[in-house]
Structure formats: C-alpha cells, structure tokens
Length: 210
Length: 171
Image 1 (tube, rainbow over the protein chains, first blue to last red):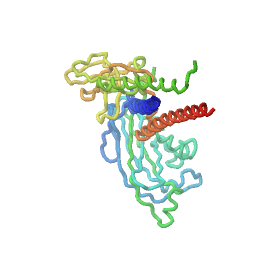
Image 2: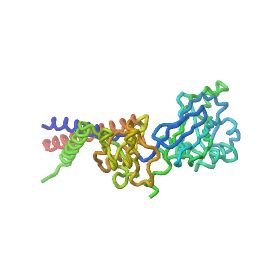
Image 3: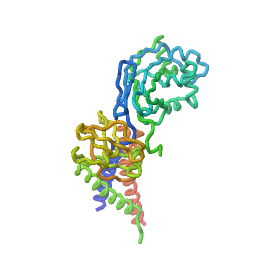
Image 4: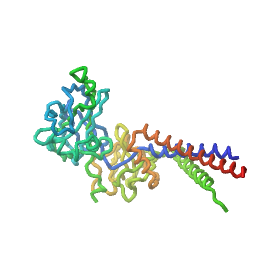
C-alpha cells in the first residue's frame, strides 16, 4: 500500500507540475499595440496607425576599432571607438508610440555592450556624456535595466508623438576587460554579428488614463 | 486523533492534482485557448492576472458587445477587447478596451480574430506573467526543478517515517 502511495505521490507531483506548466507557458494578451514596421530602406523605420505586429530589424557585421571601458570616467577615447547605428524613425500614425530597442550579439565575440538614445536626448553630441546622464550609475546592471525594454517593456523608451520624426542611435562597443586576453596576440578585434531591433508599442494603456 | 503531516500533504496534493487535471483536460477537450491578461484595459471585465479563455467562432456569429481576442499578423502578440462595430462588407471589426477613452486605432480583419471570450479565471494568469521574466527553456527548467523538489520532499518524508518506525520497533 505504501509503495502505491509512494509512486502515486511522485506521479501526482509530476502531473501537477505539468498542469502548472500549461498555465505558466500560456500566451499573454494585453492592451498594448505592437507596431508593424515598414522598412523604407536600411536605415529608416516608418510606422502608421498601430496594428499588432512586429518590429524593425537590421543586421550588421561590425568591426570595432578598439575596446574601451564605459564605466571608466577617465576614458577619453570612448567616443572615438564606439560605433553608432542611426535609424530614422517616423510616427505617421495618430497615437503616441513608445520605441524600444534591442541589440543581440549572434556571434561569439566577447564584451559586446550597447546603449540607445535619440537625437533629442543626446548630450553635447557625446555618447559617453549621454550614457552618464541617462544611467544612475555606470555599471552593467544599470545598463541592462535601461536596455531591457524590448523584452519586458519596462526599460527605457523613446516617446514619439504622431507626426514626429527622430533619429534613434544605437551605440555599441566592446568592453576592454573582457577581450584583453585576445588583444594580447593581435591588434584587431574580429567582426561582430549584431542584430538591432526597434519595437514600437502604443504609449498609453487606456486603463491608466482613467 | 493524530493528524499526520504527510497524510495532509498527500491528500492536498491529490485534490489539487485532480482539480488541475480536470481543468486542463476540460479546456483541451473543449478547444478553448487561454491567454493571461497583462493589462487593465478591459477592467472591470478582465484585469491583470486573469486568464481569459476564448473559443473559435465564425465571423458571422460575432456581435457588437462580444469580447474577442485578436492576434498580430505574425501570431506573436494578442489583445482582448470588446467589439464596438462590425464591418460586414470588409469583414473587419472595430474594438475598444472597456477602460479606454477611444476605439482601438485599427480595425481587425477576420483572419486575425482568434475567438470570442468564453470565460475567465482570476489570478491564475500571474503564473504566466511571472514566467514572462524567463525564457521558455528557463521556465521549463524551473518547473522541472519544482517537480524534482516535490519528489525529493516526498522521499525524505518516507525515510523519516520508516526510520521512526524502525526506532519504535527497536525500543
């Protein structure tokens, strides 16, 4: 009897976890509208009234001229080695929209970091100064929290009102400490296979306006 | 009367399993699709943390006032709002969140309508919302870990019980 009980307890635990999995892995539904991007060319993202669809994607093979340290306030060459991808974004629709960004390193190159901003929020035309002004502290944690938007819609976003146009700038660089061993034998970094994504969503959930 | 912890745990697990299996089975057999509600645009009807179950219906059966779930063209995103207008000619519906000030900016085509709301269950959606923080693979690993932990707890309780028994008989 106790053997049957033992086996059934194990089975019950497994079945229960499977049932939990059924609920846990369920799709979500929300009021947020995700926009369909119309890619005019390689560097612009024009969207109209919001439907529910995907995003703007562009792939780049990036060769970095050198590695740097974003947390080092004395690193004066940061702006020289940082690569900036510029994408013109236009909201041709009738509702305000948020723009989130994401950058994924599809290769094996180490030390990849990124940060996005718009020409409106840029400080003195300097990526370094913009990062310092945007993050509470110069750490990877703060940078990740700022960038997380594309996954969780909770990070930083750029607000674009109907009819507005802006240039979204995605800055990327390689952290020196993570590649210093590789750099010992060679003066150059391998190219990085990076995918940039812009996602737009409706700015205001109606419930929040009430 | 002495209530044994292990018996209580076993019975609780048994009841929970029966309810969960019946509920999941019912939804699978009925063909209902469930979605965890992540925002309050349909408050008071649906609020964050609910699970809304929808059933496929033909476009002609839809009526103004029905709550429907609509998917994106790539099927990745969904929203659940109420129909405020039906365009029979173009086979499209205009929707609106009950708590929203205006209609949704774009009408939805027939092909994108997943189904009509059948019923909803409160709170269960938080499970799905919690797992949004993880990738699907990580979510499965967490669930597998929970399963292993439950089995381990059970075997520890069994061992304690048999040790106790042995100890009693030694005395």
